Length: 301
Image (cartoon, rainbow, N blue to C red; front, side):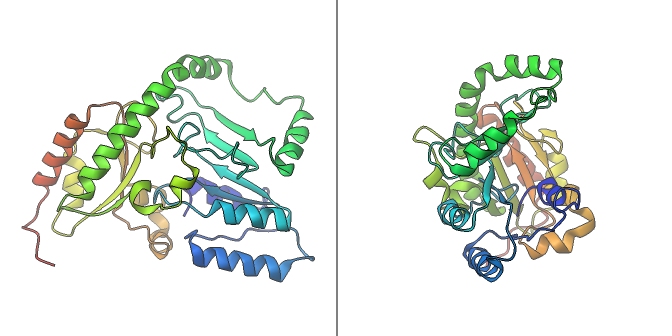
């Protein structure tokens, strides 16, 4: 299940006039469905590209990129991966030859300050489609005209300590995810360590799990009170140097909650983008909010 705009933009007719196919769970069953679809339409309809995320936003899951790479080579389509949540310091999608192109929102953790907008597309010199895209992009005489000078300047300044910030956020996020995963008031924690067994295949030796966590609370916790009580910044972005929390499903899919639910994305999912605060500070804030939000003692299961 991808980030909202990835799905919506790919579905627009001006970008995909022949339409799209959506594989919302990205699991083994979806992989088999993709294989059957490719076999069924082989020869009479070419596919342009397959877009996916590592890991996905907000469920932090990973598709089988090795299997997708085999299919991309066999059926001659591009494999494009968004690594914004994992980021290129944590996962290797280029040197491994898995992706033809990697898209990253530099606005997020690479910048960290939330005061610049930028993105990157890195094409892979190790794949045939990657080399073709590099040649095609070189024909664009305005290849560098889309980034405003002030944004470019801010990105250069903000990204200088990106490796140090990434390392610290990796460590804090894992500790916070472990804490929440073992907490009696938290029903589900979505975090690559717990829900994405394939993530370790793409993880660099020095890479972590990234700074994003999603949670769903048990019924004896008032979700609204927890959200209002939690003393961190609230907003729809992620990757800021400060911890940022949002009710993701309600913000992104308010008018299509049934659609989100059909792909196992609950309405009350809370997405946490971990910042540079100390773990003990965040633990205290989450513990306090959970304690203040209990409607009654947890019933035995």
